[in-house]
Length: 158
Image 1 (cartoon, rainbow, N blue to C red):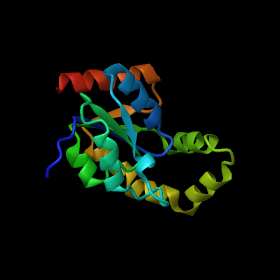
Image 2: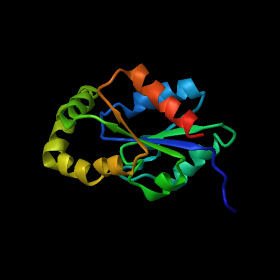
Image 3: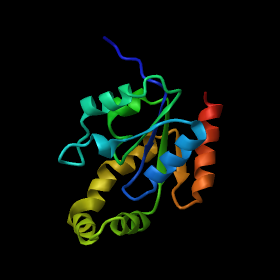
């Protein structure tokens, strides 16, 4: 049986770009729930359990809109294809890395992962979302301004 999803706004970008904060701010403006892809990841955060994600989306089947956010949100075809709107949060890698490292109790693991290939992995996956997005926003801008811009965008595009 084919499931009917509410309209999806998918927000992608590098780790530490501000996706979660932006998603929460847009969701507040749109009175919509947020589903984070990190919440649907298995032991490997780079793999999204699509069945678990579907179950989480099913919880919001009556919502007028659902905001999905995650590093790989725009690079995973099933998610991108289901989206009505796609947004890429463009944040310089150094700022994203600093934000990500500072969000951890011990930033060394984040810094080591980046040095061990995180930049290459980001270029291969999350950065591709920039070309696939309907809208690119500046992750260094003020949060209320970014959220208002995205909210206007989804309202204008129906």
